Image (cartoon, rainbow, N blue to C red; front, side, top):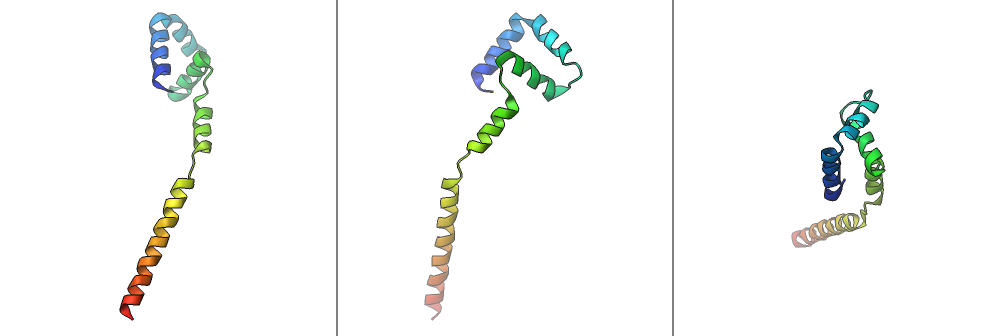
Amino acid sequence: MNESDKIILAIIEEIYPEWIERKKSQYSNLEGYDKYKKVVLDVFGYDIERAVLEVERSTDFTDLERKLEIMKLSKKLKEEEKKKKKK
C-alpha cells in the first residue's frame, strides 16, 4: 500500500469510524493482518497479497545475473594472471 492509500485509509477511519467498526465486526473471525487485509480489500478493492505476488513476479534479475557473471569472469581472470606469474 503506497503513502496515498495510507492517508486515504486514515481519512476513512476518521470520517467513517462506524463503517470501519462494522467491517471489523463483519470479519470478527479473523485476527490481525487477515482482518486488516479484508478491510483494505473492501475499502480499495486492493488485494495486498496479490499485489505482493505481482511485484515478486515482475522483479527483474537480469542485471543481477549479469553482475554475477562479470564477478565470476573477473575471478577467473585473476586466477589466470596468478598462474602466469607463478610460471
